[in-house]
Image 1: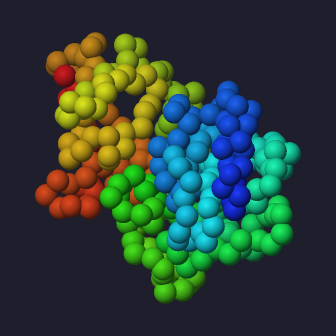
Image 2 (image 1 turned 90 degrees about the vertical axis):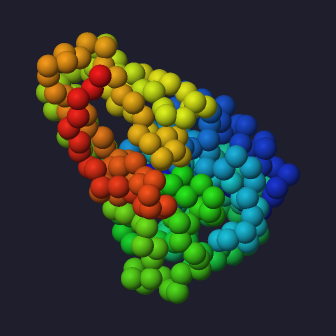
Length: 268
């Protein structure tokens, strides 16, 4: 389970807080600082501290200006202690990402404020089901609500967004650990070539993250320099947003995800 630290209300003091926080946690900050997912991703599998927004946000569910950092569980205590030290004139909030976003931002919320706790429209959150979430990158043209329209009818689990899926912490999944699974990292590394020219090529030794928005309508071409043409290889993809399909979007059906949890294919 991960945590969020929100800093809100005093717009003029946010840049100072952001700069100090990023500097303090520079050794564990994400490449580029910004998270590769939206605010509704709560699994603790991503091991970097990162900023959930590139700019100050207002509007649903927030009634005031706010920004936030995603914080893995192992850094939550020290990050919250530091946030309180540099709070200045901001209102700050710490909450866990349990999947029940309504209670995470109300009864489980820890606030330190100047005067009064800001109002949060909790029905604007898309989910209220334990251990669920989504990667909002799958809906790049929509507000970050897991592809659903908010507000939801109530905080009852049955009224939550249907696009939220069970969270999967990769650290607890034995096949992704070379030591427990009994295999070594790939040497030479796999090369990854995206079908669309503007997306960078890369290499994978011990795993990687392919987001739907990164690959368009086609999976990347994965090559292994030491492949034997007379052998077959198992390419295993673990989907961090845990939609149980671990697949690329189906270009024939917008918004869908083609079922392909584990595929056996020949790498060339």
